[in-house]
Length: 134
Length: 348
Image 1 (tube, chains in turn orange, brown):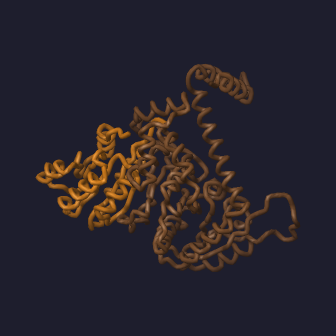
Image 2 (image 1 turned 45 degrees about the horizontal axis):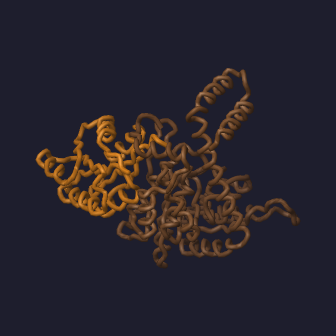
Image 3 (image 1 turned 120 degrees about the vertical axis):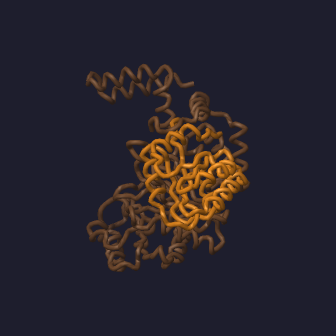
């Protein structure tokens, strides 16, 4: 009734087929006590935003290894804002060059998790930063 | 659910308040309920969260929403893990949309009994409808509730019903033989079987198949589908030599074959669902609605009573009785009677 688990969407926008990382994270966050909605491969920004809205998630975690993050991520954050979900925490994982990180942050991304990030540290970040909503 | 989750302080306070007072309609609840009825999908999503969290907001909103519900066709889809429930739901969404009706889905997946976490993966098969506002898909974790649904699934379906969806599909967790709760939550219950899942004896066991209004053998393109369907048809006919009796009668489900991945048999399934619904406007349908109402009220009474027993002055009595029963100095029936007496005598 009170200890509501945080709800996280793990999505893979774009066309790369490398979903191992997303699946490992989805499973790991499940074991950390999160309710994880996993949507699978090849999501359009619209699909991600629709799923985030219908599921009313606290966190949107995007996994991108295709190099298309500079196109996909800002579109997703823009769609989330347009549908009134600017209070949702957005994080990105995958292969993201350092120079792109400030731009993504500017677009509304709270954190970028690169290779080597532990699941525990992701879980800790989400617990500390997901904002309570009313 | 443990320390993994971040509690939401405000909602927790509201929930406590609701137990104390019976929860007056709050402006926020009214606003969300009105917006959801008017078609605001974010408001709808947030209401569903409140329902899942059993917050006071949800209670207050339900006062407005419940009278608006009762128009949707609630269809339960259940069956063993991997029998194709999500794929069939996805195919049904397409079929329902092609005839211009709106559809909502509540898809339940199990919560971990150890961490409270859950992996909700039913959306993977239901991707194609992102731009369509007449499709609304919501995943729910079972949060410790057994029976194939979450404790709040019926309430969530009522909210979607009130929001105006023509059809609400309730997909259970992968079930075994006896998770029959969905039959009370739905007007029409579809039980999925995969080919070659068992012999005739499986089909005459009591349980899941008995609550089916429709039995669907999915994966119809696999070898053995027709034989499985034939076995089920043969075994699900009423037992031989029955005479008229006052005892509850078993259902006589229609057995169909679908291949959800290709859409084969899905239009026929929708026709069968509509036919069952049309037939259910009579006494049998009233019975289902009454037992659903009864189950809902009883579960809320149990929740509220449980919360009262663990709060306030009763908490110390509760704790003392728990100790006595654990040490075998008192039997659990007497302890329960004492708690009930105390709880109901100090009721406001």
